[in-house]
Length: 79
Image (cartoon, rainbow, N blue to C red; front, side):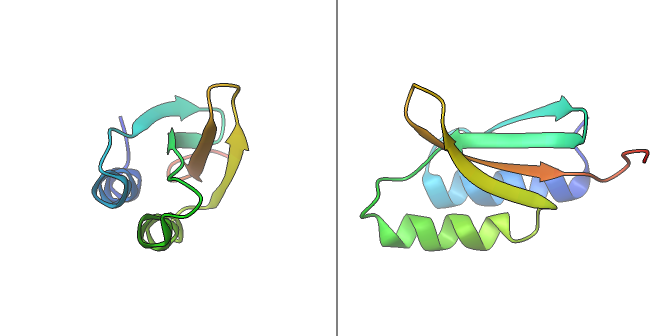
């Protein structure tokens, strides 16, 4: 079950990106991922990066299906 912080980040990303954002458990906590905005969509990038600032780790990668942005929230994860 997503933590409150993960749920907030997910909701903020959905608002920023205008699309569904995935969240699922991982070894480090909750992993959130979504398609990256177009490279020239500065407004969506600004909003997405603002939302990602609340995560413990975040970044982007290319999954072969296009660029993705991701975040990890470690609330409740045992060391």
